[in-house]
Amino acid sequence: MRDDAKGCTIWFTGLSGSGKTTCSKLVSKMLQERRLRTELMDGDVIRTNLSKGLGFSRQDRETNIRRIGFVCDLLTRNGVFVCAAAISPYKDTRQEVRKSIGRFVMVHCDAPLHVLEERDVKGLYKKARAGLIKHFTGIDDPYEAPQNPEVVVHSDGRETPGQSAAKVIRTLELLGYIEELPGLDLEQWAEEEIREMIAGRSIG
Image (cartoon, rainbow, N blue to C red; front, top):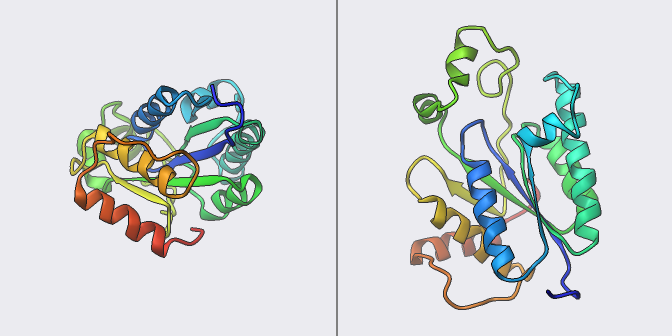
């Protein structure tokens, strides 16, 4: 275990069903394989524990994100790589969390709404369309997609989950958060996309 390693928060944002949990778990596993201290924070689990009792109004959503961000900040300051997967639909709240943490990489799990509705593994979109679920992000509540994330993973089928996770790891390498190691399975187009994202990135 590298005791001298500085931590980082890797924040996965995207609509429900866009692959945030899947990608964050894979990235966490890959970081563990590099003997880095990691912690996984999944939005659904946080809702059950840290944010139990909160609803889905804008105020409650922002409170939930701030709570996740607070824990991420504590862990990051203590050398932990935190993979936080939460819809986090509002740009201003994401920026607030980014600013408070500092060592922060945003991953946008991007898939069109129609793809997610067709996928709809949990049947949530169907219920939202039927009016059975209120304040559902993407249906009757807004999702403000990040304009300049460090990483965009295309979870509409263009990439495998493994390719998406490799893009995140490579971005962490190029940003200097983790050591560059050989053997990362990454296509040339993905490498070029990552470098373009980093070259043109700003807080978003």
